[in-house]
Length: 376
Image 1 (cartoon, helix red, strand yellow):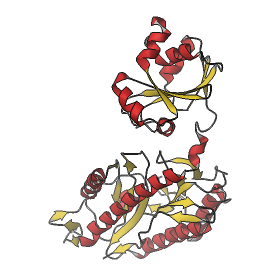
Image 2 (tube, rainbow, N blue to C red; image 1 turned 180 degrees about the vertical axis):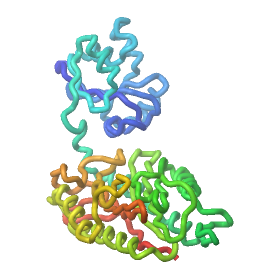
Image 3 (cartoon, one colour; image 1 turned 90 degrees about the vertical axis):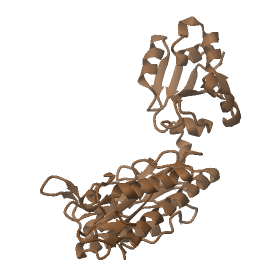
Image 4 (spheres, helix red, strand yellow; image 1 turned 135 degrees about the vertical axis):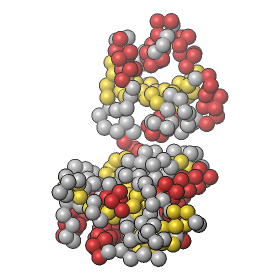
């Protein structure tokens, strides 16, 4: 029985819990448990996963068959493995992450075991990426950029029909067609992409609209691509905006303003820069270029109304973030996106996004693809 009656506990599967992947390095579709007790790390898995977990789990984690825990805890604890773990290890209080299942909280309390929510990130060290993590992200970004090039090629190789729609290899080029081709190619490379944003025209003014229907000549096409590695769980993220043929003057001005912010921020980024300062800079620059943020006549948000960027790793959105409320100072090892945008429903939207690594002196930009708007 452990000397320390306070432990740390995670319950989850490898798809939904980045923390459990970070702690164990193990991928399982079903729920399992991770605990830190008296300086030791344990993973509790079913018999279905035991042999694989022993072979694949991080070496500093002891793998335990949860049937063994149930047997040692006794019949009173059958049906609540966290309570059984508590009994076996002498735990009277668990520190848990924000997404810890509430059903277990209730069960643990019935056994007189206290549950306390971690104040902040469960693993704050996740903010600073290790050399190994950076390589994982770099590989994800390589696949992301290849997909972005694929999208551009679809548009470049297309012709415009009499209705103003793009045609590709005898088919109407649609948001759905591009998305399906991109996501299928990711699977061939051992990545998964769900909800890839290929939005055109008015849909592109809705930042998270996945997009549907034909690609229209002269209208903005936002391609926001964010795959996750099936092998290690790390994400990539990249956005470009395209127009087939000539864009209208207002759209070119929107793109110029967004591009200026994107490039200016990337030139300023280095250790010691405050996240909120970059968000403030973006807001002021876009407003200074004549693009008002607010709501249109129909009450739809317009202008620049989202964060300038977010960190990524085992989750697509991690801390720190570029937001007025985030006063964290950037440090070497932070990986963060730079994605300003401008959106007006009558024209569409423009967003340009790179993912960068904060280095000792500035940044390493994982994105090399050019950022021009018009595709002939």
